[in-house]
Length: 321
Image 1 (cartoon, rainbow, N blue to C red):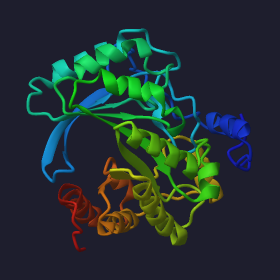
Image 2: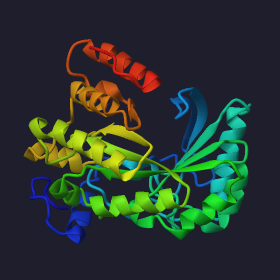
Image 3: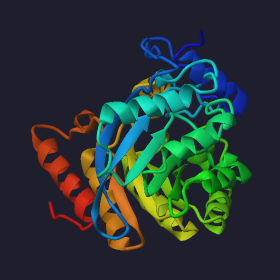
Image 4: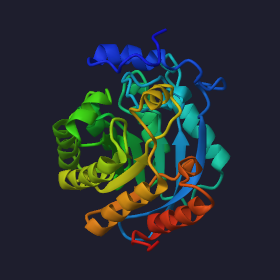
């Protein structure tokens, strides 16, 4: 195995190998079952109408994403092989059954630690069944790599009940050209913009994921580029921006941390990025609060900051510190 101190490579193929070589010590979830979802939860989210709407988020078990993004740890919750036809509908059915009465739920998120429209992750043969399972919901949210946006997305949208909106979540990450290229995502801001344009032209809604303080950014530049990335996403026509504080937990970022190439953001930085997005007034902005305590700026202040962020997520208005 390559040394953790080895310089970060300059080509995509070399970066793939570098990222995978640093997974030792960060094993896959040993309980993964192709016939059972990794989990589910009921969430509430502020809709474009301004009302708070409840929905079901289902975390599907499927094949690992083919891209080796530097910051990603989702492979830990994915399989090494494609699931059988019928497995994904079985997972959704199990989640719906465990959730019980879903009559009050307005939307469903089918998150699969990769791209919903990756044939090796979600068999296309299951799309019709999945669309039928989504009939009770007014909105279906899926994830997709920008390069996979195209006719397959439109075909799935047409399978949904008339009136059900399809929302596609795309990872923009950052518009800093040098950093985005080094993230090994194989996408450019221009490619992201083309994907959003295609989705809008084909009657799909769009949300973008933006990283707060990705690798290779110091604190002085990270907030500026988070703001630029939010502005760029809304300028492309997205409806929602979700801010993701970049986290340790995949081996690659730990290696970069040892060499000074990465340090996580502070909660204050996440909050400042959200305030920028809300003040722009161009769309909804949500902060990802999962495991937020890992980003505590010290003492018990993270609890107060979390409460502010939760209120901003709910109200979509700036809450003063």
